[in-house]
Image (tube, rainbow, N blue to C red; front, side, top):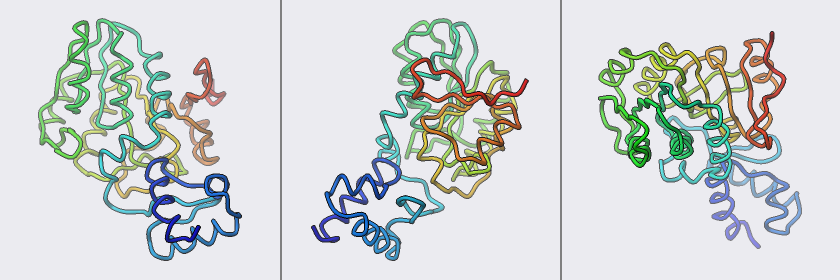
Length: 265
């Protein structure tokens, strides 16, 4: 099979999974590793993919992937992460759920909870939780971002500033190797910083595709995160930062959602 035939499928897999690996593509196409490495090099030279160790990712950009594509990206992992997160949220507490496809998955997993006060700047989350009459939902004001149903800007921040949350569940567009949370939209960054400032326990939900992505806007260091829930082993530098900060790391792949031994007494 020539590259011209494999190319659309390789890019489609990268968009669906967040990255492609040499080993995975060798098994998928039934060709040699050398052939796949040449394919990935050719795609990198045309700017359609970016080479990383063992495979390739979508190219770095200052613009986020389209919402519908993000919604499908690593969907099974997002569901596992969401279940692990929801299992840690008690009934009868105040929580904030931010913009993001993984936080939307968390909202779905909270449909059996009771006595929650949920504040959100995500129209999709408000719609999901409207099915549970035992949860009170407050939607922030703000400028509606039609691409993903997010509410951003000063009105959103002003609403957040009126609350103190027991838990906030946030996402990020990228998680750098040093543990910094990154995003694309400066207005969303400002809202995220306000959320962190007004929350006792901040939970970051981020699947492993965020480890390989790049985004230009700084949100917060990992030290501001109480718990990180993910689906794969963290990059070494990020893991060390979590250890130093006392950030709890939970791997959703664990049957009991047990935390790794990264919390320092």
